[in-house]
Structure formats: C-alpha cells, structure tokens
Length: 387
Image (cartoon, rainbow, N blue to C red; front, side, top):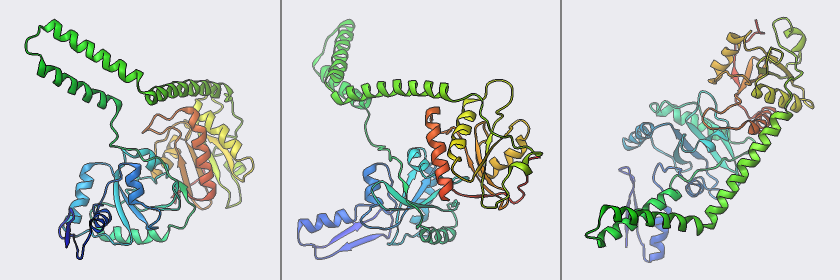
C-alpha cells in the first residue's frame, strides 16, 4: 500500500511506499502532521515544533498582523521562500504571545525573526535577527546563517506560551444555555410571554448556581485570585511606604560630568531619568529604579547618577530615539561614554499592566543581563556629555 500526503503548498508532496500496517500509517501521519509554516498557539504545539530531543534550531517569525503572515505564505507558495530540513520554521502573533516574546527582551526597533534552540524544558539559547522586510529572501537566508552560528550564549528562561484555543468558562456556560433553550423551545408550543420569561430566569439561575457550586477548581481559582489581589495590594502599599522619597544619588550635569564619570573604559554609567532633588514628591518609578540600581551596584564597578529630565530633555531624547523606546520618568540608561554604546530600560511596560511592586524584579533582571553582556548594545557615534 502506498500513501501520498499533500502539503498545504504545492508542490510539497510526500510519497510513502510499502505501507503494510495501520501502525506504519499512523507513524507516517504523525511525522508529517506539521504544516510547512505551523503556528505556535499553545504550550503543546511549542513543544512539538521546537522539540528538545531533535536538538534543531527553531526559527520563529513574529508577526504583528495577519497581512504579514499572508505575505510570507505567498512567498512560500511561489517558491521564493524555501525552508531547509535542518531548521524548524514556525510563526506566532506578537500580541497573542507577548509575555513569551517579552521574556527575551526583544531589541528595538522590534525584530520579527527569532532563532531559538532549547537546552531544557524551561531554558533556551536565543538570537534575534535584524528586522526582515518580508521581501528580500536572500537577506533573510544570510541573517539566518549568522543567527544560527551565534546560538552559543548563556541560556535564558523561556516565558509562558498562552493557549489561544482554550475555551473560557463564559463560552462553556453560553453553549450550555443555548443547548438548554433549544431543547425547551422544541417542546413548548403555546406559552405566554410572562411564563416564558419566568422559565428562562429559573433555568438561568439554576445553571449559574450549579456551575458555581459544582466547580471546585473554579472556586479555588477565584479564592486564590482574591488572596493574590489582597496580597499584592498589601505588598504594594508596604513597598510604597518603605521606598524613601529622597534618594541620595549624585546629579549628572555638564559641570559635574568630568568629576563623576569613570575614567576606566570598562566601567558603565547607570543614568536614571528624573529629578531627585526638585520640589514636590519624587515619582514612585524614579525612586524605585534609583534605590534598586544603587543597591545592585554596591558590589560592582558601575557609577549610578540621575539626570534631570527638565534640564536635558533633548539630550535624553536622542538615546530614546536610537533605542526605539519612550522617554518617561524612571527610565534608566546604561552608558559607556568611551566606547559610545548604551542600553535603554523603560520602567512601565506599555503593553501590559505591570504593577510597581514588580518593577524591582524587572530592574534586577535588566541589571543582571547587563552584567552578563546578553543585552543588545545601541551605538551612539556622536555621544557627548550632557550639555
């Protein structure tokens, strides 16, 4: 018996001969079940596509819209974009899997091609490629060769893959209500409007009560969520109270730059954007970032200063523009003035509701990755002291 498997793109056809048993047929279907460009939409599909036992690099296209996916798919259909056997290709949508993408600190401006090679269930070596314009395939091939060759750095922890297909409790409840209503309508022929509304109200009340009282996992989840909110609120209140309003950091100005900045070329200057000595209360993000960086740099060789946003706004904006980030109070810039490169940290993630209590963890993670050299470096050829 022979089997012919038609892939989603012609002429990708697989022919298998000498299939004698059902077991062999199932093995063939299992090995050929992936599309040429499969979508990562759940933890299971991620484990299947970027599999640890295969030890193959996994190239993930990060799309911002369905139009980008359709453009890439058309390149595959016309044969302009062809994939090699020794690399597994896939894609995901940035908005749907934002937490997963953000765990790798994507470069700015945002790249749309990620090369990943898993080292364990929860860690992988990664390499961001230069942003692909979805047109020039030759540049993509060249960047892929360079990116795969660079997969030898320190493994990073993988973020969470969201299951995009999991139905919510509301979906299940509405489906149950719809089924119940259809069953009742099929048996009731003549009934007054008031009686009909009463029956629907009773059924709805019964279903809601039944679901709430007979779903221990949902009840436990709600209780844990309530406890989590209470704990987070208490921690945040304590955190704000314990964070000092006045942070003792030197101010970097055009006059103090030569005195404060290190002479050693290997040292890094950490600049916090905000005014710590101005009138009024210092914004909480500025205080949090300043206190945490001052604490983390005690045992290191970094110099921590603050730069007034009002005095040097245009000078600071140049860093933000080169990094593709927003300049807001509490931002931090790690600068090497001698070698003229830097990295930019933004305290509040504009794509998710990050609480101030989590800001400490983000600053710590940014500082650790800065020390180990795994953060991207942005060049600033005309970098000078503030003026």
